[in-house]
Image 1 (spheres, one colour):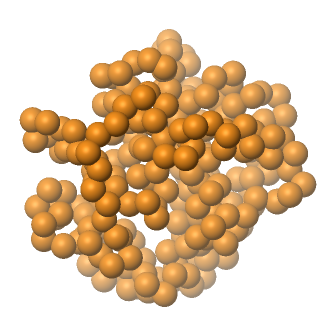
Image 2: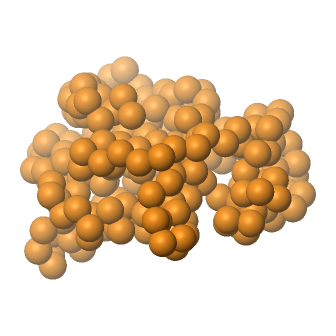
Amino acid sequence: MKLYDSKMAPNPRRVRIFMAEKGIDCENEQLDIVKGENLREEFLAINPRGMLPTLVLDDGTVIDETVAICRYIEETNPEPALMGTDAVNKAHVEARQRHMEWDGLLGAMDAFRNAFPGFKERGLGGSVGTVNAIPELVDRGKASLNRFYNNLDAALASQKYIAGDDFTIADITALCTIDFASGAARAPMPENLSNLKRWYQEVSDRPSAKA
């Protein structure tokens, strides 16, 4: 397998952490998205959408989209289970994972992509052409993140991890969202949210978080 990756972006990191939790490694090629390396002909021939991460299997099959890649890895390497166990638990993990994306990661991306000068004509990712940034979306993204932080803190008052008692893909997405928001998007989590801080410290200490 070969993973087309970018250390500066949260979505490829989600796959790296997922793979690290599974004890899986593969060939890795880094692309600089600020320089637009993901939009060059060489990569668009592999993934016409120009999106990262992209996984290419040994038989040439191309899989893009973060969760789709993780699903492939989960199905081929089921232990430890990171996407749920039985039907109800799988549905719950999937729901919480989507909450982390919609309630948190999208806001962080809005806050970053619409403020970063290098993306002033790339307000949307991938090979969609010129899309001007919208500065007003920065404040909306940060407001979304503030709600995200407070809702997570409330949920973590009564459970160890995002989706319950077990570490899952939902925790991976939440960790990558918070690190990206705190750094690139300049919207760190508030210091007074003790439940969120407890969870964050614990998942940040996992070896996979360094991936």
